[in-house]
View 1 (cartoon, one colour):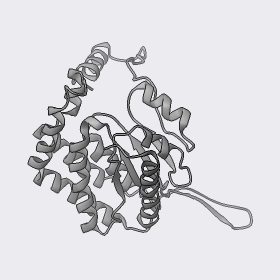
View 2 (cartoon, helix red, strand yellow):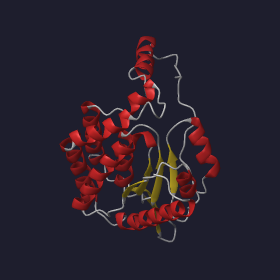
View 3 (tube, one colour):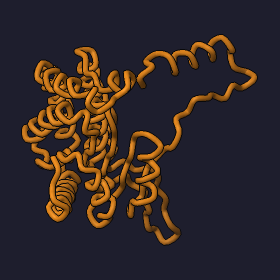
View 4 (tube, helix red, strand yellow):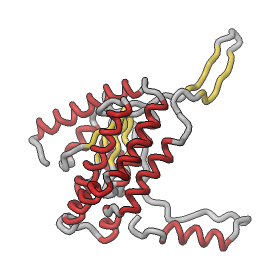
Length: 262
């Protein structure tokens, strides 16, 4: 979907505004509500696995038109096992300790004033990623668990898969009493949308890009808010003299060869 420039800018603005309102509401929900959302989302992912697979087939059928490599197609593909892994991932996040309200440190000043460092939500996270639809569930789970609203911008090649997953997450959010727009998906494939969001520091607290070097570089240069980023992948390890060489070799081979597409 491609929109005129003015309409695209307005669409992005409205999405960011909805996310900010959702973030305010999310800061007030209980850990129990978030746990229910995560578990219900996991359940629905399994129950709707056939619908997700059908959406994924639509994406795969267009993979050649997008010029995807075999490795990229592998990242895009959602098998029954991978859908199950998505669900298990959400269950795992549900079981993590509730981060919001945790007191990290506390001290008493000479005048008796108690000073505490307490974990609070960041606000709105703009999460940009490429052809892996499983990241849709992973990113949403971690962001909402930490009390943040998230705007997801996946690759156009995974549009149908991402939409099917986000629809499920939204249904679970309604059942859990979470704000409707806690998790939003950018529907347009227009790359200009990314630029609009990167220029909205009044609504978006932090941007997290996950992808190739060109994406990371663009976000780093254009973003007007903090960016949590990486650049090149880690293709090396440090081996201490006390390490077991055979074990180290096994770890390295597993890390790079377990799934070549990743």
